[in-house]
Image (tube, rainbow, N blue to C red; front, side):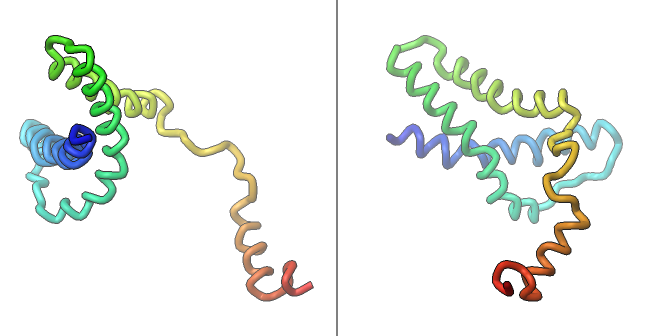
Length: 128
């Protein structure tokens, strides 16, 4: 299916270009901050694909479903759907206040080092 390949190949880098090289630069210019344009930001491309691939594939599936039903204004509806599936996870994260960690970890941080140190030194199950 060509539609999935096109959306998967083009959507994540296009979203990156719009977000970092267009919108961020406009926001910095309006705020009076220095320009943050840097070609080295291309090194973020693997992470961009990890984050943007699922919304791109969902948008491709939605576009395919609209094409099968011969819906008018398919491109506009697909664009709105892509915006929604890209924005809603961010809205949920902002609503939660970025508190994604548990209140108490399963293993306390000071005990993690002690447990791994025991196994490395041979005092764990291998040393028994």
